[in-house]
Amino acid sequence: MCNDDQKAQVIGLDWGTSSLRAYLLGQGGQVLAENSLPLGIMPVRRSSAPSDINRAFERALGRAIGEWIAAAARPLPIVAAGMVGSAQGWQEVPYLRIPFDVRELGSHLGKVRASDGTVIHLVPGLLRTCGLPNVMRGEETQVLGILSAEGNGDVPVGLPGTHSKWCFLQGGCIEDFETFITGELYAALRQHTIIGQTMNGGSDGISAAFDRGVEVATSANGLIGDLSTIFSVRSRNLVGQLTFEEQPDYFRAC
Image (cartoon, rainbow, N blue to C red; front, side, top):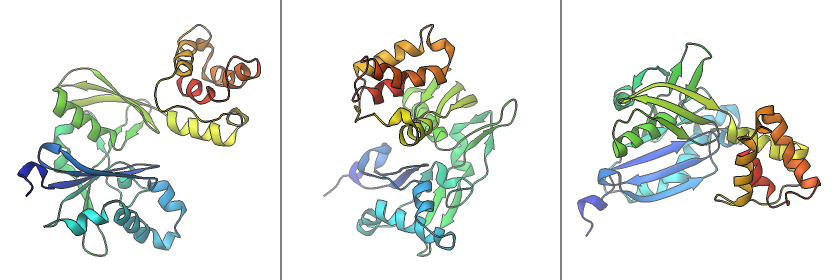
């Protein structure tokens, strides 16, 4: 018989632009099961007619967590963070303005109800209006998790992803943040430009080629600008300084 820690308490969804990651959680946030599918909001929308969007999101949800719901002894709360709560997602939840204490996120949840009555609670994103406007959806929940694990350090927090973030914290508040369109730019250049035509594979970790890219990006050559260092992915391959297999890792870094 399962002890209390092993009993499912909640289902958490990290539902972003390109991926849907689902977690079956026990007490204290223990991960009892997880699932990852290429069913972010953009793939869901691209594969569906506008009149079928709600059903498309329901189908994606069922693929990710349907077995858990069927096996649960009682209805489980479902909480979703990320782009699923955006204007392009399933149901828009308004942004909250910074500075914002992320420990208060639970008091501002939106919700969407599936056709079978299942309720999905949606975490709002954060908005900066001063200077250049900036937004986040999903990263605020990651920051909350970091604070829960590490305390309330007044430190910058780096969050890599499709749109990478640097968040600047004071106590439990996100005081400011910056966004860098890293992962999406990488995918676009690799798939749709000559830079990506000769790339082959790439590693899942930190390779020597990645380290070389970091060295270039932080050197005097890197100060010329990103558009120059990105082109070196191709030029270094042409002169024999990068193999086809090394190019992706080098590209990620520079």
